[in-house]
Amino acid sequence: MDVTLNAVSGTHAVLLGFDVSAGKRAGLIGFAVERTTGGHTEWLPNFIRFARNDKADGPTGSNDNPLQAFQWGDYGVEPGQRLRYRAYAVYGHPGALQLSTKPAEVQIRAERDDDGRNGVYFNRGVAGSQAYARKFGRGSPLGVPDARRWLSRGLEEGLLGFIERAKGTGWALRGAFYEFYEPDVLGALKAAAVRGVDVRLIVSAPSDSGKWPDFPNAENAEAMRAQESWKKGKPFIRLARPRTEAKGIAHNKFLVLLKGTQPRAVWTGSTNISPGAIYGHSNLGHLSGDAAIAQTFVDYWEQLYENPGTAELQKWVDANSPPPDIAHSAPLVPRGVTSVFSPRSDVTALERYVQLASRADQAIFFTAPFGVTKRFEVEFRERRDIPRYLLLDKRTNDMELARADPNNSIAVGAYLGQPGGYRQFMQEYLTGLNSHVKFIHTKYLLVDPLTDNPVVVTGSANFSDPSTTDNDENMLVISGDRRVADIYLTEFMRLFTHLRFRGRVNVPDDQRAPDPHEPQVKSRRHLYETDKWARPYFKSGTPKARERLLFSDTKIA
Image (cartoon, rainbow, N blue to C red):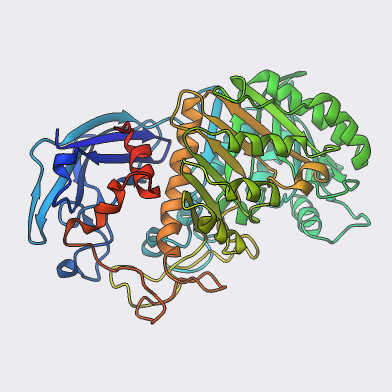
């Protein structure tokens, strides 16, 4: 066969990895991919094109402008959708392309949002994108229902659906939140209380307290007051207790569903209850249907409900929420799900996550909204013979980690925020909903995802000392669940690829990629017309070769 094809499916994305045999490398100028779904066949698009095809009209098919990469993504996928891909190696030259006669074929079904054990919901997280600019132009999405749905991409809908599972009398919801002022979610909780659900919440200082009006406390209080009464004589704000005694911040974002006194499931993740979290920067909601895990959240919530000081809560967390041990070989963590809460009296949990990264055998994928903290920085400066991908919100000194080890690939938040120059690329705009963290707000570590023993660490904490010892936080450690790992991996690479392209130009402090005609910009506007682009991917031991082998599932000869 001329070309091999490996496919990894998430809920809204499919990752494709290509490779060709040694005898087919000469003259390779890219790959063309057909996608068939529902009886309709089309070529996957490519925005980058040959110079002769350069027109101001967006993407064109990969059969005319082939994909010059060994890893690609299809991001127009719906949960549960059945798809067939055919990948062709492309030779010849612009205007006279030759597609291989024996394409590789893969049939796959996209994962569903929730399989009963784990539901994973990522928002779009890319308001600064070509698709958003073409669909909605510039401006806030808040007054545009279609824009809100497009940006939420099932995240808010998943949370609202979770709340609706509490049917009425006999059901209960227990939650703890940091930012808590998105009106639709608050309205859904109010509706639950009206239909008889026992709703009790812990929110970062939602009432007039000594810490008010520090963010987000004023916003939380005003949003709850705006909901008015949920029952005669009982304003909505009475459903919540203020969390005021944390040494750090009350940073949790979770909601537990109970039938009677029995926990059924828990919703957690990185998503605050705010418009910026749902429709702006990248976030996720993780729904665990494991009743035992939900019980651990109820136990933790009961401690929080008493509004203890940090030292008192640390004692309870130390005794009741031990972090998992990390083995020296796979499986690095015992299979299953473990909840890890904060605050803690020491940084053992954080050190375990660093150990997990240091003992990875295949690859690491890591998001760090506020930069790479010292403990992880030491690890990422160590030379490892595996690909390590870092997704950061902004350009900082962490970029030096790529020079410390060339196997570290780093992408940072950026958007094409200036007009002109790229022709087929429209000017992009952000939503304006996020003032500090504009692009990446997720907090997860993904280790060895394409093996039989993947590990996902995900939740509210930012992999930092304060998140471990001072803040109220929660994390899940999920080991051995390939479906969960596949969803996280496809979403990571969707954003990584999106931002890596924009970050290849010299992004200034405001994170707007400049006009490529400016002298400091060295990014290519056009495809190569020879096989020069592919040669580095076949140089043994290089980062590009490792990426090719990883995503194509090609064994090292």
